[in-house]
Length: 312
Image 1 (cartoon, rainbow, N blue to C red):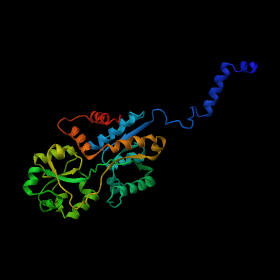
Image 2: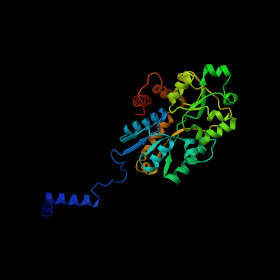
Image 3: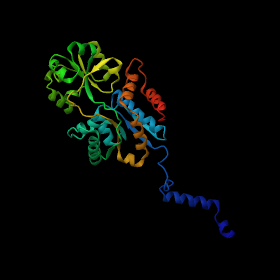
Image 4: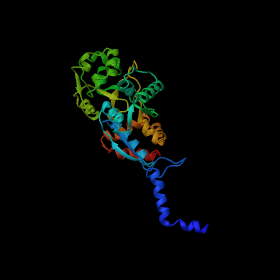
C-alpha cells in the first residue's frame, strides 16, 4: 500500500486534476442542491418616464442586494423600444403595465378583471416570445384626464362625461403616442369626445413634468394623466372620474425572459416580494419625490424606500 501511495507524486496529482477539469469543460461542476452561479449578470431596462425609471431601479437594487451583478439599461423609450430590447436579448427584464402588454403588444381586446389579464398575458407572451410575467403590483396606474381645481370648478367638471361638452374648445396635452393608441381611441369614441380633443387641439408634451407645467401655466386646459402621477396630489390637481370605467387596468409587473428566469429562479421570489409593497399611495409619493420640488435622484429615492421596507 505504501508503495502505491508513493507512486502518486505531486506532479501526477496536478496532472490528474487538470485532466478532470478539461473533461468538465474547464469549470467545476455544480452538484445537486447547488445554487445559481456566483454573481450572475442581469440586464435590466425601463421605459422613459419617472415611474418606470423608479421601478426599474428597484429591480436593480433588489437583485444587487441579493448577489446579482446588474447592468442597467434604463430610460430606453416607449413600449415598442423596450419590448424589442427584451425580445432581442438586449435586456433580460423590465417593468411593463398589464393592459399595455395586452392591448399594445399582443393586440388583444381589453379584459375587465386583473386575473384574466394576467392569464392572457402569460399565455401570449410565453408562446410568442418565450417571456413571462411575474406578479403585478397592486396599484392601478390607469389613464385619466386632469385639470386644475380652478378650471374644473369653473366649468363644473368632475368626470369624463362632464368634460365632453367642452371637448371641442379645450386644449388637451399629452404624450405623442396618445392619439394613435387603440385604447385611447376607443375611450374617446365611447364618451363621444369632439374629434378636436385628440386631433387639432391636441398638444404633444412628451414627459409628465412638461405636461403638468403646461397645465399650471394655462398652455393647455386638460392633460393626459396617470393614476399614480405624483403631481396630482402634489400640485393639488383634479383627476377626473372615468364614470363609464372605459380604461382598463394597468398594473406594473416584471416581464422577464424565460431563459433568464430558469437560470436564476430566485429572481421571481425577490421581485414578487417587492411588487407586493407597491401600493398606489406609495408609488404616487415616490414619483413626487423625483418630480416635485425636491427633485431627488431616482437611485437615492429607491434606496431609501427599499431600506425603509426592509427589502434590502
